[in-house]
Length: 125
Image (cartoon, rainbow, N blue to C red; front, side):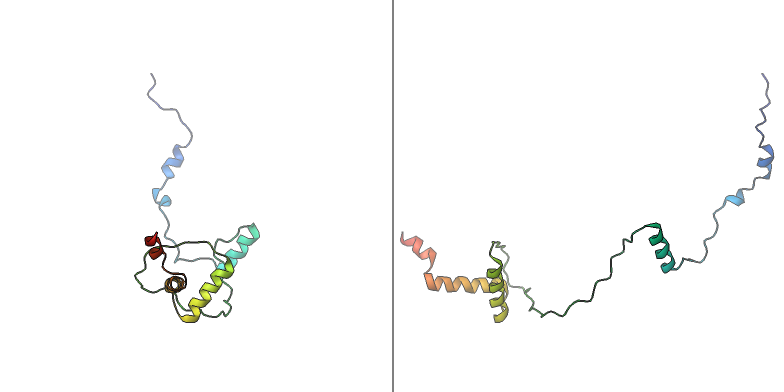
């Protein structure tokens, strides 16, 4: 068997090879292209920005009193009502400066006064 290797034709290139040519270059001092130029180039290429659009200025609305207070109420009560009923309920709460839970408690107390206590009626049966 012949011990010599076949000549592939790049032996000269291996002799000239310098591994230092392949080391990573030092990055420039964080040079970034101007944002306007990149935005224009992206728009020209058809890319859409994922950046959030700036919010339009908020209109002046009447401020509502805060409804979050520490009250000890921790049970959830959900129900469906007509929008005008909800608006009326909130209007009463806002006019009196009450939270929604406090308004409900006062409404229940008024209903009990007007129609009597349902628990007392159930005991009579």
